[in-house]
Image 1 (cartoon, one colour):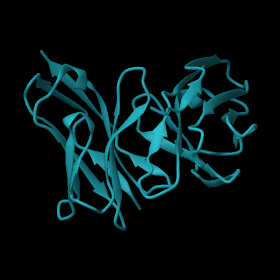
Image 2: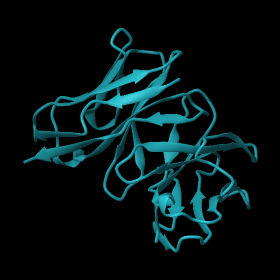
Image 3: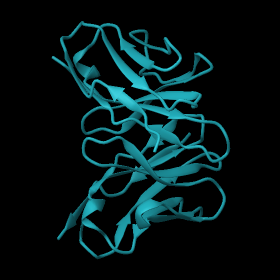
Image 4: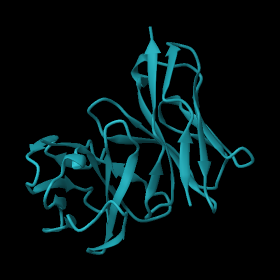
Length: 114
Length: 112
């Protein structure tokens, strides 16, 4: 069963520090996503990525966020200067092409900003 | 605009009894609808999806959901709950290759 893997599973960081959340999508997938879930709230869309560029982003995805596919396998989310309110579970997802494709989600990275 | 409302934040059933998790959606065009399940410390797993083919959709682990356009509903059901079904379930509306809108989730508790 193919799967999306995310590392680390839990990251604690001090406010103002930069963090990079890493994701390894399924190898033949072309669409990539980041979502987040603040504790007690809904899962929210952050950004979608296709063909090496952002295809859509939400209002949450401001200048402190960036995504990258540095080496053709990893897909990273960088938060430049973390704030307390960035504490959340971050989910990566990838999706293939074709009519019967589905999005596969990773197990999430829990980010705690202190 | 698209949105999803999951009507129950918690549902508790006894093992062997039916499960009903309710979902209503709002979409300005013909939606794709999904149910995902999340077990503790696991990722989101697709249970089933509706993409304008049959209105009754069968998924994994005995779950199914019925798309009812007149009621804008996509409730998830299972005839007989199993202890391993205890998890959080998310109703999602969206289209492939575009963003998904998640419901707030329903935690299913299964009592022995």
